Image (cartoon, rainbow, N blue to C red; front, top):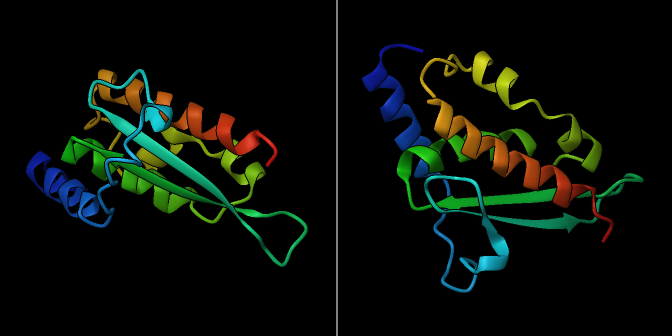
Length: 126
């Protein structure tokens, strides 16, 4: 995916695709813990014509780079079923995007915390 500067620019562009949460949405109940930068996750079930509802995923972060990485995750799983969310592989996704060596281990741990909470929340009925 190019040099470090180009990847950084790409992530900032991705961050701009996500709206900033309101103060109400940035509630502790929506906060993802385990990330260096503050991160929030909102999930909603969308009724679907199929047997399984799709899941609406929304992320926000105070860090533009983290928000850009979260935008990539959101793009991959928004509208997915609970099973598709459960099958999501962060490391494979980062590798496919050429970002494996770009994402530091502390950032990756934070993203893993966000994905873990996403998967746990998506698996809960109702």
